[in-house]
Amino acid sequence: IAGITQAPTSQILAAGRRMTLRCTQDMRHNAMYWYRQDLGLGLRLIHYSNTAGTTGKGEVPDGYSVSRANTDDFPLTLASAVPSQTSVYFCASSYSSSQGDEQFFGPGTRLTVL
Amino acid sequence: GQNIDQPTEMTATEGAIVQINCTYQTSGFNGLFWYQQHAGEAPTFLSYNVLDGLEEKGRFSSFLSRSKGYSYLLLKELQMKDSASYLCAVSDSNYQLIWGAGTKLIIKP
Image 1 (cartoon, rainbow over the protein chains, first blue to last red):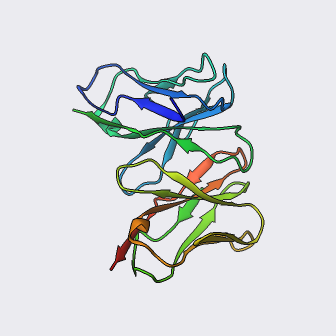
Image 2 (cartoon, rainbow over the protein chains, first blue to last red):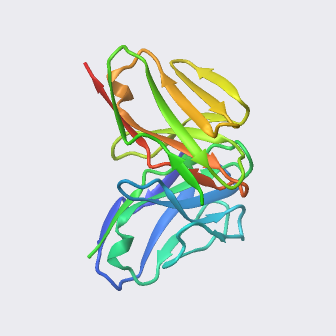
């Protein structure tokens, strides 16, 4: 693989179900991020990780959890999905979390919670 | 609070020039990014400004005035493939990106 990948591409989920969105990068980037994108709103940061083994909360972390066991993978878990979590989810990575490092985005996961 | 403002939608003609403005109020400033996002796709990086002035990169240029909390993206010689949303994002005091809602640019022949 080259770059950053996400799975699944899209998913329809019943409310109350647990779901894990997968994200893998092969660029050896230290920092990774999860965003959600909703119509009329800017990208909103859910969780981030500045380096393997560490994670932090973004602007909208409630209802989501993440882990960063290694450099490449950064899964996002919805413990009990609710309809308001219907969104497009983007995973991104950057060489570091410092000034000026551009973020590279995965293709996104379109999630619908019914 | 933190706020990034940009126009919701703009229309321009193929071959022309368009300027997309972005104003911001954030807790700290560690640079401003512009990204392009085609419909149904991921955002891709266009430019980064941290000092005042104009950065030129081919048909695209980006300007920053930190004292005014203002940036613009200038697109020259517009092509149909430039039809996309353009996202402005500011790196705040924690180096986290605060994103505007994006400007949808429609190019007409």
